Length: 181
Ligand code: FES
Image (cartoon, rainbow, N blue to C red; front, side, top):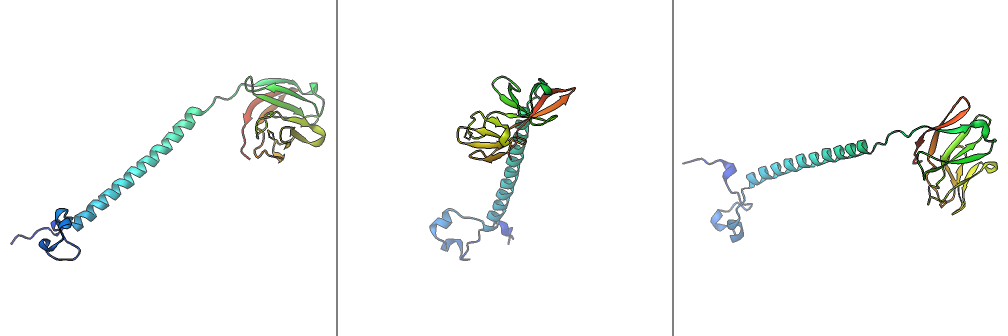
């Protein structure tokens, strides 16, 4: 008598012989042990494919952010600090045309600069030095004059800050910092 590999045998759940099984089971016999092997193989395949998709997704995000890296903006001389009175301000475009920024002299040796576009719906903000804030007249939004952080009204994000350096009394814009909070 030939001993068959038990994995090759069809094992109906009720244990009755094949001839007594319902027609649908005879038409589609399933070797339970082999079915488990297949299921395990399928599961492994699923894990490998899922891991591959995850790695590919991460690689895509990395590649996209690498490609989207913008070159550092050029430096821009904004004039001598003492050309502005304390509390005075001037508007300039940086890093390119159509990107309005505000430079404000907040102390003898201190200047700050922020994007002039409100982070709510992009209305232009104006400095109110005596109240220590930038005011947006569109929906009564306010930002801190020193930090650009929202104080009141609809805006939730701070104004993008222009990085400044003062060299030999001249104020230079050297970059822009976007902030989410
Ligand atoms: S646009 Fe500035 S508060 Fe709405």
